[in-house]
Structures are given as C-alpha cells and as structure tokens.
Length: 443
Image (cartoon, helix red, strand yellow):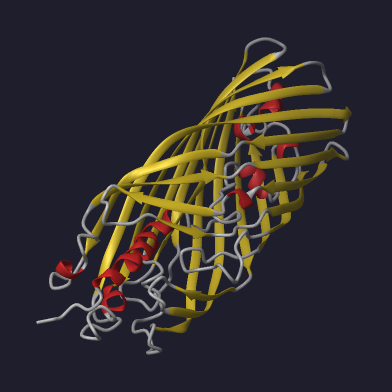
C-alpha cells in the first residue's frame, strides 16, 4: 500500500498542471506571425501582399480595406481557397526532473495541410456608398505530434480556428479620397491534448514510490466563444498613378468556455485530492489589433509595383488565466511575453496582354515568440516569403487567379521547461507552402 507523505504539496503542483493542460488554447503558430493568417486573396498572395490595402480591383477589400470598395461601380462576388502546408520537425532530446532522459521519439511531423476558404460580396448603393460582406479566417492553426513523443508534456495536439464574418461600408467623398468601416463577428474555438506526468507530481508525496514518466495520463480542453470587433480604412489617390491605403483591425476579446477532460491511471486517481476530473472551465483570450499601410504605383498600362508595412500588437497578449468550476482544480496564470511584430513586403503585377497578368513578391515576417518562451505548441520563428502568381481575365466580368507562396523559416530553437520540471532542448526545422486559387465575378 502506498503511503502518501505531505499531501498538501500536491495542491500547488496541481495548479501548475491545470495551466499546463489549458495554456495551449492560445499557443499556436501559423503562416503569418504566431497564429495570424493572411491568406485571404489569391491576387494579394501572388505579390506577397505588396500594396496591401491600396491595391485596386480585388473583392477581398471587404476585409483588407473597406475604403477600397469605393473602386467598384458594379457588384462583385469573389472567393478564394488556400491550401496551407506547414511542417515542423523536432531534433533534440529531453530529461525529466531527476535528470533521466525522456523516453519517446521526435514526434514525427507536427505540421499539417489545411484548407482555408474565403468569400466576399460587394454592392454599390449609389455613386458614393458601397456596402459589402465577407467570410474569412484571420487567425488559426493546428499542430499534432506522435503519441508518446519526447515533448509530450508540452503538447501533443493543438488546434485553433477563428473564422470571422465581416460587414463593411465605404463612403467616397471625391475621386481622390474614401473612408470605410466594418463590423467583425468572430467565433474562436480551441482544442488541446497533452500528456500529464503524474509521476513527477506524486514522486515527492509518495516518497518515490512513483517516479517521473511512470504515471502518464492525458488532459484535453475544448472551448469556444463569439465576440465582436471593428475595422477602419482609408484610401487616398494623390495622383492618377498612386494609391495609398491604410486599414486598422481592432483587438477582439474572447472568453472561451468549454470542458476540460482528463485520463488518469486508475491507481493514481485517489491520490490527486479530487482534481483532474472532468470539469467546465473558461479562459480569456484576445486576438491582437493590427494595422496595414500600403502604397501602389502604376508605372504604365503593363507594370505596377507596391509595398506594404503591417504592424501587429502582439504585446497585448501577455498572460492567460484559466479558471475551472472544480474548486479542487486551482486557477493558474502563465506569461507568454509576445512582442510586437512588423511585416514588410514588395511586389508587383505585369500584364502580358489583356488577359494574362503575372505577379511576384518578396516579404519578411517577424515572429512574436522568442527563444526564452518558445515551446512545441509554437514552433514559430521569423520567415521570408517568396511568392509568384498569375491572373487570367476570362471575360469582361470573370477573372481567375492563382498564387504560390514558399516560406523560408529560421530554425526555431527551444530550451523549454515544462510545469513538470522536465526539459526539452533542441530545435524545430520549420517550413511551409501555400497554394491559393480564386475567382471574381462582377455584375
């Protein structure tokens, strides 16, 4: 029979473990910095988003700059489908709290391939007022590693989905200047699975009768919430060949509510003081505000060039507190220490003839993570974008676009200590590609 020593020491450990299971709700990576997505336009992706909110003739203006909807004198219906491939392969090792090597493999490829659709509709009301609506996904990501891998105590499966419905309007003051605004309805859902080292928690209280890695269990969380934000945009045409655009997307605050589920070895459950049983829980989560500034210049009837600078206020995402209804499952807070980031790009369009347009672009995208705070749930680092694209004007009303983006990502170094005091050391080899197709019809 196991004799439990100093059972009061279990309670603070359980508080840390509560957070370990819940923290992944927001710890994602994606093809823009952290868990941000920008793959909402085949035209824009073909030029690495160069020009951004200043580019003309793209129905995705509903979400990228509502002021630019003023360009449309007829209705527009457009849609895009992006296939996002993300790879994250770990190389390294780990040790438990007693210095013994962590068992398990390297986790395989933690990345995945995901489709990300978007659709937009624009309708002019009169010469000054244009309205629109769109459905897109500004945030989201997924990672999943092999069972029993060496980093299982930091994460096994993490999934974030954040589709948004946007209602927008544009007011054209004159031929040079327009303003726009939008209402954003965003639904965020998150799912997490990660292993729990009950052996590490109970090694002290049981006097070493149970040791780290000898009592693995698993915890999962699933929660969702609907919340609201807004956008503001402006478009200025100082000359016949120049366009300047700016778009602001507000921070959107969520309180995710759902359920925590736990798998615990039956012989250990009586030792956990009523914790680690299925229970409702909630966590406050925000998606950060960001602002895009773009310039687009038309040199002649064939060649146009744009630049873009985007700033994302990731520093507003500092900590996360998890609160469970089960009073035996203490609330906990963790510091993520995300930093603000810049995205910059240059690219352009070249019209071969009245039907075919070629595109290309180059961009650099900073990560908000750092070596000191990176873990397997965020195998993210700064990356360079290389993109190409093409457009085909099938008729006066119908066009098709396609683009391909390759990401060159710096190795994501990691030296992370879990709440179980196990340490994972090494690096993730990260890469990504995005293929996007789109169609746009005016009527």
